[in-house]
Length: 390
Picture 1 (tube, rainbow, N blue to C red):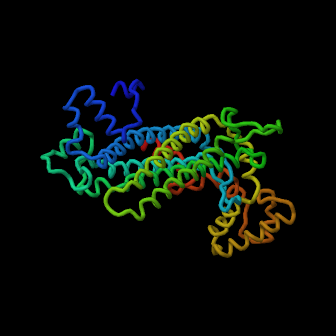
Picture 2 (cartoon, rainbow, N blue to C red):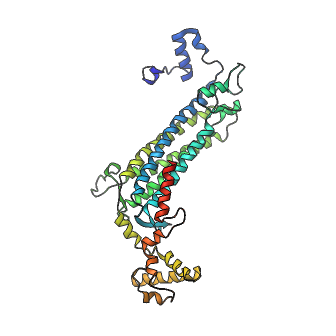
Picture 3 (cartoon, one colour):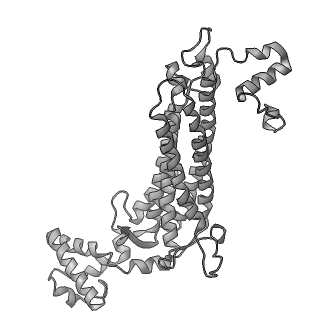
C-alpha cells in the first residue's frame, strides 16, 4: 500500500487487470500464500465494493465543500439584510426584496443538495463483497463481519443485486447534477448582475478575465465555466442511464462505463465548488445600483393595490385600478412616489396621505413579515435556520 500510494510500485500493464497484478505481485513476494487472495471473491464484487468505498470518501469531501459554499453565501447575506434590490419574475421587475433573502434562497437549495447526497450515501453504504461473481460462495464466510470492518451498515441482501446494482451511482450523479444546476443558476445571475446593464456586483479580478482585443472587458469567466460544465455532469448521468437500461442480470462488461462518468462528475463538481465559494465571498456588492433599479419599474404597485384592499376595496378592483395608475405614470413620466395626493384622488377617494408610507420601498420590504418573507425579522430568522443546519 505504501509503495502504491508513494508511486513507487510500477504497475505491469501486461497483467489482465489490477486484481491480477496485485495477486501476482503478492505471490512473487510471499509465495504460494499470495494465491489465496482471491478466495471467496470475484472481480465483480471487488469492483462494486471499491467503487462504493471511493464514492463514500469523495462524498464526504463534497459535503464539506458544500458547507463552505453555504458559509460563504451566508457571510455575504449577513452584510446585506437591509440592501434592497428588485425581485424578478419572468426576468421582469416584480417586487422589492433584500439581497440577503435572495442569497438565502440559494442556501436553501445547497442545503437540500447536502441532504440529497447524504441520503444517497445511506443507501450506498451496503457491502457487496462476498457476493462473488453473482451467486455467492461455497466457503463459510462471515459477510456481516467483513461489512462491519469496512464501515458498511450491512451486507447486501441479494448477491446478484450486489454485483449488478449501480443505483447508487445514478442517485449520486443525479444529486451532483442538481447541485451543478443550482450553481449554474447562481452563476447565471452573477453573470447578469456583473454586466454593465445591471451593475449590481463586481467580481474580484481573480475570477474574471479580459478580452484579447477589447481592453475594457472584464468577463465573468469562472461563473461561465461553472455554468458550462453543468451540461457535462448532466451528460454523464444520462449516459449511465442509457448504459444500464438494457442490461440483463447480473454483471456485464458494459458496466465499466460507470467509472469515467462518475469520476469526472465528482472532479467537475469539486472544482466548481472550490471556485464558487471564494468567488461569491470576494465579489463587491453595489448597493446603490440595486436600490436605483428597485426605484424603477413600479415594483411597489402590489403594495398600492394592497393599500386599497385594506381600505375596503375588493382586491381585483384594486388590482385593475392600480394598473390604470401605473399606465398614467408611464404616460406622464412619473413614478408612484412622485404622484401627488390630488393625482391619486382622481382615481379613488380612498387615498390618503398614509399611502406614501405604504409604498415606500423600505416599508414594502419590511411589511413582508410572513415566515420566509423578505422582511428584516424574517430574513434574520432564515439566517439563523441556515447557520444552525450548517
